[in-house]
Length: 333
Image (tube, rainbow, N blue to C red; front, side, top):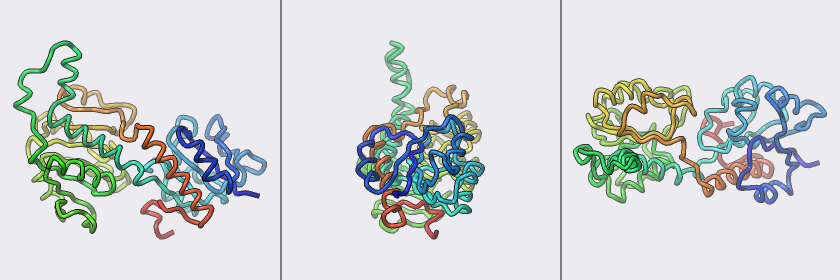
């Protein structure tokens, strides 16, 4: 009898890959529940998900079953040993609850790097050159707004500070270096394989003081909520710009808005927000900011890569006992 794998989400681009990667080695079942209670009942003896050992998970079913919080994870049977999350960020999964149940979580690093980094690059260019307000002006048949040159800058010769030089941060560094921009970064540790032109700062506030633009690339977890707060924002030079393609809650939104109001920040470029899909209406009062509705991985190419990467983690788990993309908190499990 083949081990059972539950597709708890939507496979949009990789249906053929499901057959190729899992068909010969697993009994693949699809999500078919009306709500959270019905979902958990499916794991009971005789249920449609009974015996599931691995779960492919994305964010598409949160309206039906919610996030993978402690109450949901606690309801999982002991047979489940692997959750393959389709995404780089996994803040919708209660990691300590999974640890307590002996469930390992994987994500899809690498697959999202290019699309997320090019989104950050777009926000970087748009905010420095004030392209968003210019396009809106043209669409209103007003041609270009007056006085934009006074507040617009070339990328060349300016300093980009990257908070978190992981895969996405490194890809953005490569793209921005081509202009060239000066690249400086802060991570928990110096990145040993970073190129020489990436300057490491041990002190984050010293880095911020030199930044024309700060781009945020850290995961959301209890230690990073509000990480970029009043102190760090005020450590930036006056007229700096913040780009965020990570998670909205990593930045103290109220502190950021205060800095926009008093002119300490010239602009922000945001692809993520604390309470998506809700957007703080105060942000809409700043005409020069660039706002996107979480477009970071919104391409068919990247979404296909993500789905395949998650599926391959399940394939490796079934074949070898472990996938390659175990999240950092579980590397020692």
